[in-house]
Image (tube, rainbow, N blue to C red; front, side, top):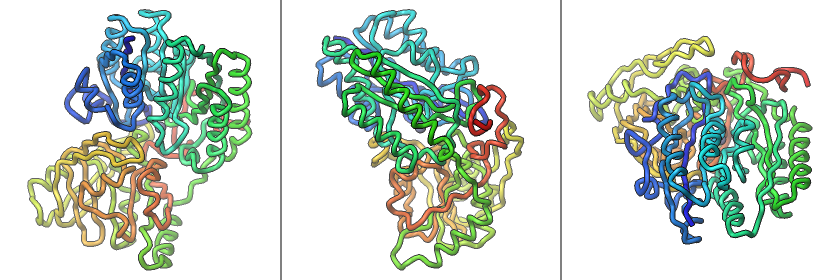
Length: 496
Ligand SMILES: [Zn+2]
């Protein structure tokens, strides 16, 4: 038995000014790893790709891993980058295989295709019309017909933060291996709802997604090969952005349809609960200070969540609105993770550890899609630390996977330790802090550029969390996003 196993992961924020060339698809070198290098990078990790490799090993299958390409979210994927990845996967399928297992995201928009994954799957189908294709998808998939029609079995993450990537790979992969063994006949039903849930209300520890994902798990306990609700990625102005569901049963089409419709109805009934109410930043700052004053001794930090500028949703990670408010308010004993500013990191490296320096920090990237210019802020402090920014996640999210923050520096203003990075990395893992010598649990305040994923590795440390509406292309304020391509009517843009 021979399996083609590959990864192509990107969540595209069509409002993001951050470019997405092929070089963004690897933390290990200028190009995404291929073959043995890809296997070495992902074997034993908590990724869906790691799960596929594990299943192949258990089955004694021969594997062909043409490429493992994963990029932090950003703007439209360059056509050349998509072709680089897709051509390698298609060439592997053309070499011949018994099945294809793909670790995809589900919300890739390229310069030419609104549905990057669907385009890849159509090309694979053109080469191998009958080969079983198992696909693991992110919960933020915006599901298009091409994806659903070309895949044999789809499984989506059931957690947000995504701590079940590996389990999702197992669900997708096992359905396909059972088919190859003649023990199952994966049968899929899928559908969409005209709704754009706010990302800030999508966490799977919170209602309504908690109950929806629990129902998916219950269906699997009752015999579904996989049941998935994709809450969708709304910062993408494409026709089919939004919520969808897929259920795979063993040969029972009617049951798959019934369960899929039940999940879609459940989500629709909860649509108002998926709407996020934004608190004005001044109120958030005042609340954070009050929480810190009332904090019992030994309690963890008050987390200030700069959720409009999360690089794991395509944010530039360099807007200074929330950090500026922290500096203006004179908050003390703060760690801020992080500001993306390669120029500032280089300036600190040239100044050297211990040097006092004044920088024009952040705000280097304009955000034309939301009508904003980048606004740097002049900040003075001491260069506390310089490092190469390499670390491996300790988990629970994407455990074992490598991260590359690039040249990284910590600027200590006396009140705030600001981590300055040269590659985008979202703080969802304690290792991001240990890599820069900061113990966040001992800080009074911690500012994080994140929306929901920070909960994976850091929520347990937090005494309280205050969601701060700053500036950026991951804004939850739909009035700031010019939706021109998404199908209408759609809730909550339209009253439904
Ligand atoms: Zn996601």
